[in-house]
Image (cartoon, rainbow, N blue to C red; front, top):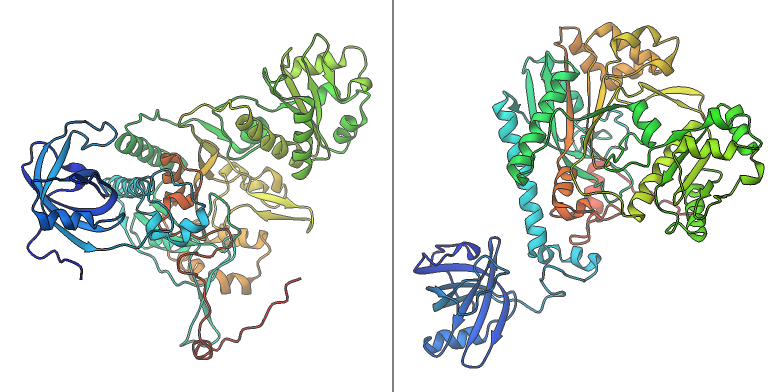
Length: 592
């Protein structure tokens, strides 16, 4: 039978014991036992660190025998006297001391764990996720969750100080189009009707501004039924905010203040503000991405004017069809990007939509050019000069419609940056502003909204709403960190007539408007202050601050790629009685 805590109360955390203490009581998990016969060492671990317990010939016999029975991951409480260690362990905070134990209690025994609880655990992630409660005992994951806590704590403190009110919004809401699939919840009382879990609190935070709350903040849980990847989870947290009587500059300034405070408070890093900015068009033209990593160069160059009359039909045809010819240069990479490596890059760009990849590899005095035989006198030299390509460099060129050339070269640039190891460490924050309001869908032949339908167009673009949708830019902005989108936001439409006009432009009928957004549209009839806001991905922010590659590393109980949780085996089957009560019948899907 296990011991109890009765009469023994913890006085110190393991990693916080100091030589100033005399008699202490600590509790934790057994990290390691070293039994030397007449001398036993036990490393005891809790969230603060590790401390060494010692048992020797002076220890009471019953306590010594109990120590001999201890195994890894046993839960112990120990009372004893602190003394200096003979051999200092510089790897732990308490490496200069140890506790000479006078009383030991085994509160809980442990079976042999399916993997060793060590910092650099090599066990595959699937097994660790199945036993996540054990995985979370490891210091790296505990440190990540502590970092996540510090981000949340700093967010609350900062926004509270700036007159924001933390207000909870409903978790079961009306299903409205937000860009991804909703998770839906059946209603037992309203048979055949469903709630949706919020993809964001967008409509409710706008209603709070209409309510006169002025400034709202929430660490909001959000749910999206979309395909997962390393920086996505089906449920996530965003630092969600909305402000009244503001325009874009006010919101960006508020968010910059938070980032500056957060990095100084949590990482002791000074972030220089104001943060740099690029418009959407500038980001796409230079980096081929609306979330560019600008820590390194290799910018995209448009050489269309130079090659429009050359003898290479791949280039000239692309330009004649309204496209462009653009390239990037990998400086000093000719020795690393061999012909075999370039062939791999060709396959990569074909896999993401390009027809091919032209190249110039300049190793010797004469550049090796994949399209050289089509070039007239001086044409290749002009291309190399325009690209800034010199001896030792490799130029990679794509010719197609802009919607292909830009993102393909953007993806190739990022791939090569990682492959060539030229991306420096650092915190590269960047605002992307003036997003297009509409995007053209070639399949349907229609202009579709790039944002939710409450986003405000820029004032100077209002005249083009019906006549030239390509010119319309939005009062929308994203915060990017090292090539990862951290935050997205916009100024909202508060004019009832303009909102109706936007709905019509998006092809929504009066019936659809009433069914999906009727309550919000009605609210605007009663006056609304100008307002806008943003949502900052708390999980992504913590992931980057911890130096992790996956949201799973900063999420206590994450889902895997098929949206299941391996530990609890969710989602699971429910009983037929539950389904009948909800009026739901399961129809088997045929997997083809």
